Length: 298
Image (cartoon, rainbow, N blue to C red):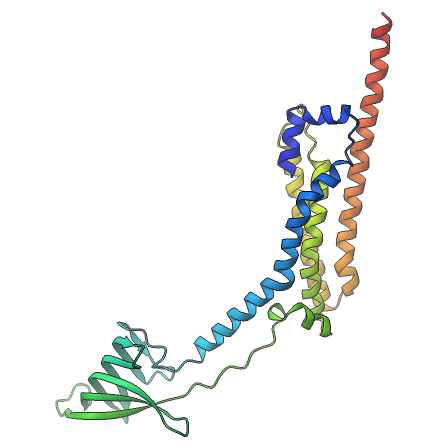
């Protein structure tokens, strides 16, 4: 919006519109006509889609962290168990039959190093919930590193118990909570998060209106001066929102003031800039008429 209107000033198109009686405030309807759909999209993202996506990402993360050692094994890579007492290697995995091929398992027990290799294996679950990795047609090597007395045992079937990983409880995180849940919650963090979500579309609408008076370009002052001022004003606005949000979370500021205080202040700044720009245009038009009268008389 800012760049488009600034170009209209540079190309003297705005002068033509003003000469036709279309004032600066008439552009508010046109700007809002294009900005409100974007504001609605921002509201949908901040109030609905973003919390839902963060909640799903947190669920998938907890599921991945709660997988057992065998389920977490990646074909073609060595993986250490969570207790750091075993190393697994699986060459390939058949998802349809739940079987794995060319397995390597190394563990340490009672000071002895044990290594097992097998052509294939599978996972079995007992009725009581215990899970086992069953190695088929393999060989076990057991001994002490640095000594020659290694025991070599060939087996047709060998079961290794898989330690179950307790599922992690979901930690309450306000960013993953839905907006209705935040409305029911009474904590400071929930109020701060709700202020942040509601404030995003509000700030987008205010910035769209603020771009109208900021788009004025004075060729003598440089073409990019208004853009620099707009960036500085946006950074100040964004930092004030972040600070007020942090104060609400810490209990230093009430949620109502944290939500509406900064936006009301920026709305007042927008109104003042509209008035200032309109007064400048009125003065220039008045001075232009006074200068034109003596020339016409001559």
